[in-house]
Length: 397
Image (cartoon, rainbow, N blue to C red; front, side, top):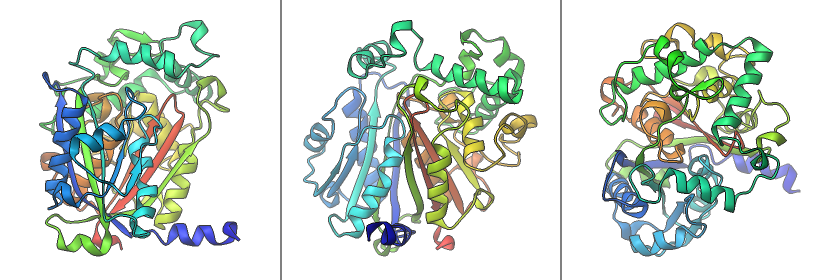
């Protein structure tokens, strides 16, 4: 019986919840702040942005690389008493993956306002990137990879990039197009960490990290925090900011280790995207602005393909000639993405926040004209977990 009724119940959630508040804090370098302090500042700003107070928050979703029981100190630090708690950790996709369970909790009446939040001081804190990598080896052993001492996660993504090149003729110059487009958007964003000009030749000449990926093909290492607030749709019009409705959301996981990936050129985004589109009643052609988890340049190509913006194998040609840069055919990663804006260990929340800002018309010089629909997609592990959200303005309901 559940198999018969589940799809209708799932699709009935379309537009039932709105993002009422969104905020970032400390993006780039935030000396003197630890993970919790950054998270708290972003959370307080997002709650205020929604026209609420912390007393109104009775749902919490959060995750951290450095603490398996992270929701509990967050509850303590923010002074919350949540009736709904989700600490599911799927890597960088966690915060978009939190959306669908939170929507169900809101619709069930379990809670009224859900805070999704994240913070990391991995660039400036004493416990930084090197320590996190070491902790991952201990807490998340990958027995078929670690004996060979790969440079994870870069080497895993380099493997996927190499396979894409071999199978489809993708070139390093096409990968460089992704980095240059991200930098072009970042130059329009005062919050972006790297805003210097960047050319294709500079990307190609940059220091190699894991062949075929150079340092400019790899995401930043920054501090930063982000948060959003969800409420039921019927409550949203009474709040101060234009509501952004969640039209579709889905998560898919096919593997953990890169060696267990069935096809290095096809990710579980093909499933999460398909299911999110089905819930939203939309397709790739209906999306005005796209925010993708670009931990590496190959990610953008893979996700453009798997999410239906171009055919499999055509990602490289799709991005040529500045097609995803300002003025191109498809606005992608309009804040500068993880490659040029911010990447404090896990990026998913920032893709979601940029989508919200675009649909609210708050993106300043990088604003996409008449944006009514947005796709935010996040990735975790080594192309392991994928979560997709389709967002829309009130005009899309």
